Length: 143
View 1 (spheres, one colour):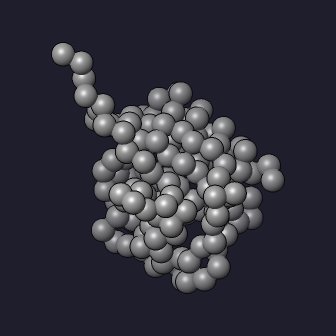
View 2 (cartoon, rainbow, N blue to C red):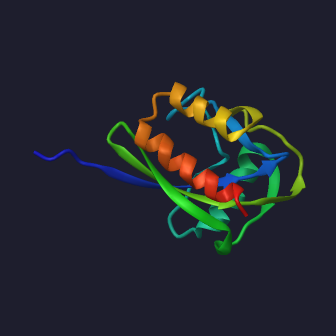
View 3 (cartoon, one colour):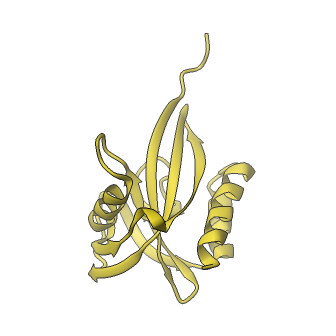
């Protein structure tokens, strides 16, 4: 019998400040303890950019500006028979104050690309997964 794979749509925001990426330390599974980009699940009947705005506001208290034209690329991660398809968008902070959603986020930290990639490798993402995310972030940083 074939293994059932469940696809989950995620959106992540790329926020760059002083040539570093804003990351959040995950307080819950999947990948608890790993630093990732802010964002989360797209709900049924929700537009991706609206989901991203909602998730960033919920997770870290910031209001952001993001449009479909800010889309940079996608990467896929696998965890416990689930495939997470992550859409990455470049976003701009337009308001709010950094305030952590303690249930899901332990810390906000800024990383260079190399520091962020090292962090991903430490949490046992596959080389293909790390490369997919790295390539998207390289695209984001070049415009």
